[in-house]
Image (tube, rainbow, N blue to C red; front, top):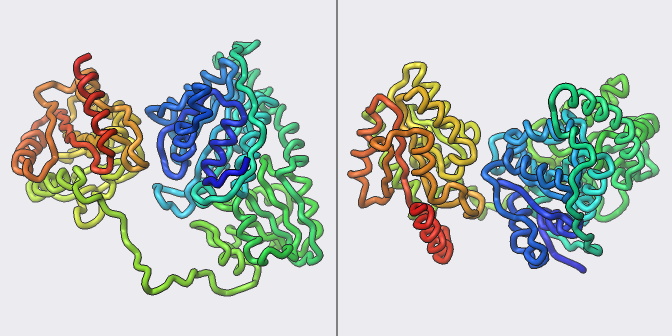
Length: 539
């Protein structure tokens, strides 16, 4: 069957056809479409594949390990910074091993199109000593996803499949293969593998180290690691993933005149690299992300000026690659800029017209002359745009859930008053534990949960917080007298300002829930939200 799909959708279809029984994820650009595709798949619905969103990436990874423990194949999806959240479970599952095939799709975001950093997830794979796969196009994304589950089960290890933004969000036609059946329920033969007390973990770690030689041999022989010979040995090119496409775009569908080592499976195949290194006058390393392979060459050879790449300055150290950057590195041009027509004007992102966050920021900004500048700690979500003009409300933006602990820490240092602004989904993702710290010490901070009833920034997925915020805050221990719900509408501006002011100057923990649904949510979904909130409030 031929399908026109995004790179993310190719992975989703590949996972379905590989016989998965579940996908676990938290929405995060550029990975979101993988889970959404499976949620909408008729095949997935018919097979009752688990597709519900998780509260965060850590719980998603742990639930996936549980499904793998039961013998089923399972997919975990997240963006690169999500792996930071999931890293505790991820690093330890490399020690415990898996039962049913377990593949983690990690979507990196070079150039930070929608992220705080452009970290390279291949480092995590190398750190954990697990296989990494990196497709170069949509067809390979489909094929390599199916292969990833076989590789996972061959070595009883989780496998990282690394994507990048451009491949995740570009379309191409793929050819699908015959779907595989789901695995039968079967608990592991040696359950001690999953008991990571030191006595068992030591043996498991030794086994993991012993597997490295076989993983390297597999990588040397992998069909996804290709040596493409050519006549001109002045330059030898090592490419990974999508960088291979950028090379080929410079030759108008003609063969590249230089030999290429295209890498899509790790660990890095030493013998293939050695062959290229010894036969070429210079080596150009083109990899999307950090100079991981370029650094690895230092382990293999005495590096002088022969190896070129990000570390040598022949390729920019930051940001995405593109065909023009590659062309300059190959000496084909001196120009690395795209010619943008004058009619195209850059437009910064902004909050939607009618967004509840707008009215909330207006209320907070009214109070800034009273509380002073730079007292407001922000978090990850649409409301992060409150750090930009015309609002300039939020003063910090670090990671999911950081607003509450940072406000508490500043308060501990003597800053008063302090405000933490956090969204409903981010709060249940990783804000609750910070609030518990503040409750335990009755810290004089005001937490404002901007509740728009969705994971709005990534497409209005269901929020784990829906209809539960009051109960969660009460359960954590926020005093009911200082747990208040407001409706952030312009007509309520004066009332909301007075409410926020009162809580700001209270010398203890207070929580304000600014509750109004996202304006982008369709009416049918809003009706469902109202029903859910009503049902959960009655329970």
